[in-house]
Image (cartoon, rainbow, N blue to C red; front, side, top):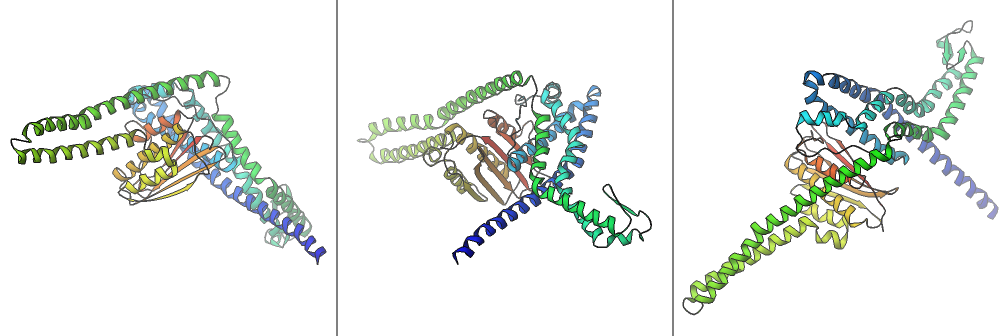
Length: 433
């Protein structure tokens, strides 16, 4: 019995490994097929639109259309970056130069065309519609194409020939009878074996090609320094604006109420002996002013850095945020630890902005928020069933989210077709403690 059980354990382990290999290969093939369709149709469409829009810049039309087309291209590139990291662990850096908020369209286009990342995106689109299509389709082809060889070996060859001539070609094998059909079956078995063992690696090749095309070359350090300089300036401007907002809210809100309460207390002190009834009324009003001032101070502190975020972490802070959202919001959290405070703050306020957009602009009835950490990346996905149409651009709250994430080398991807649903995914490289 011990010998039999000892023999069965290695056999069971081999079966599990074989099953895992098959599942990984099939998953890579399915993903590769989806990428092949997107590479051929999506990248080719974006490349044509970009070329036409840039060609129309001299006549003025391109000044209006180029920012929108470029935003769509960058959204597609960011989506590919997310898939590269999620499916194959390939990190593709993003080095877009941030645009100052409120930049008019006629100034946005020259800035976009002066960004080397824009031209890298166009180069990637051209390669993605050709070499990218091939490298994405190869994992799926190695799993599907062998089926034709097996069918020929089992007798399908009779449909194409009577055995006296070559009626079909399977790859480089001419099919003229049962013998050549068996050779096609053997070739199919070889291709299937290669696919089962190497489909995930071949899918990784597609993303390595993407990284090679989208990553800055020899000027990488200089471009990176320039992007970080602009990002730092954007962060400094945002911090200054936030300080001005806090000062304004304190001056117009809690400070004004506290001053009024002080005046009421002075009046109460003077009337407490002469007119107790009036003093009692003013005392009630002062108590109400104190409560209102306290509520405003709490809201102000929550807008700066929510106490629940500092005390209990990002997961519980987002759950508390979901409870205050006026639409049904589901939160899923898989965070084995805590990120640094600035990263948690950036992710929290990004989720807050996305929930606000879902309620105010999308008309959503259900929002799902998913937070997880894998392979050194904090990934947040917000999905709503609203009307769609969200995009990163001038006047969009998503622009501020992307700018905030850029400080941490984060990536934002938006999928929001008209009619919905809207799926916004953001990734921030970080470690958990």
